[in-house]
Length: 218
Image (cartoon, rainbow, N blue to C red; front, side):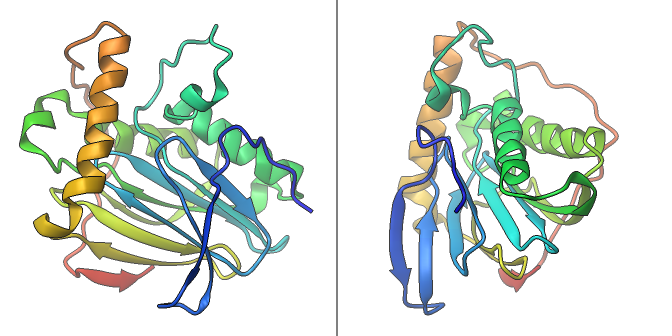
């Protein structure tokens, strides 16, 4: 049995008819770790999800974060902290380790970081999230086996922790409207709470990934 911090674990369980298995839907600020044959699914705009797996232990998990770092270190609100990549990555990895995964066997697949709404482009949030997750995994010495980051489109990803497979679909404008706007509104609210109206861009040497197919497995 995998024990998780229930304050920020995804709780939306359903049966996915497309794949014919049980599924868990992740919203911003949530994560899920499992050893069961499930599909973990989420929609990403400027947010990023890391899908991390230990194939030997048969354990995998996914998170969904909204901003890279600088969460208030004095806050005791774990649910709010999960919106930030720094805490979300630590939570995901720690839960994997508690479940029996080992660092040297982990592989990661990372997705998201898009610039999907024109009025959010000046904040450069998608690029910052993408830069953060690549840098974080490099520091932690976790191999990245696949990535699809940045770009202009929202993404729906389906992650199968048991096999490590991911299917990805780039969303058209009419498909993404509600979920992505909710995501961006929460990002704006977070920035307002922190008393900032602008995120300054910064340089990075991290490679930019690309994909030309609208639906593809990784």
